[in-house]
Length: 215
Ligand SMILES: [Zn+2]
Picture 1 (tube, rainbow, N blue to C red):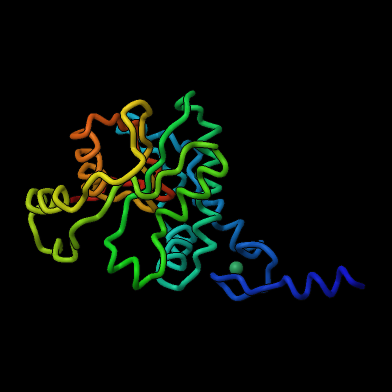
Picture 2: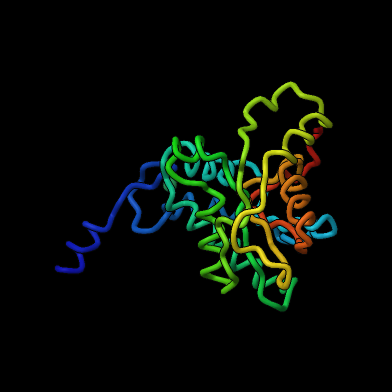
């Protein structure tokens, strides 16, 4: 009886379809999410990109709910998934410094959180790596990238980041973001870390389009 009452209280609605659930997603959405998971998350590792799943269907929808529909708990779900598949892949034996790609402060204040940071925090709880959410700082808004040539875009982005607190030269960095598209953001972040003689192992993302986007 008490169990029944408790489970009723703990029931909430699935952020993707409104069906009731006691976990992050209802069973049917969860099943669909798993379909977007790559069978090999290391398939892009030659380019130093570790990607949990294909940026399509339910994974795309989950990330949109995380970013635009105030569902920060989905960052936890995705971060845990990413952490578990990272551990399984065994790409690096030692401890890493994990840094999320920062958002510009103003944008973060509007949203209330940086989704990459929610993902990296949950990731580190699974892997035991050192979380440094302020390892990089965003110092310039980059809203006006649209319409710029790829070169100009890259240039603007490089000036958008600065070194923050917690990244050290004696431990390699793993960057974390929600989505990897053209890679311009990741390259800019890596440049800043390299400028400070900090080694970057690569970037781990929840989603990447399985095709190569034209930048
Ligand atoms: Zn659902």
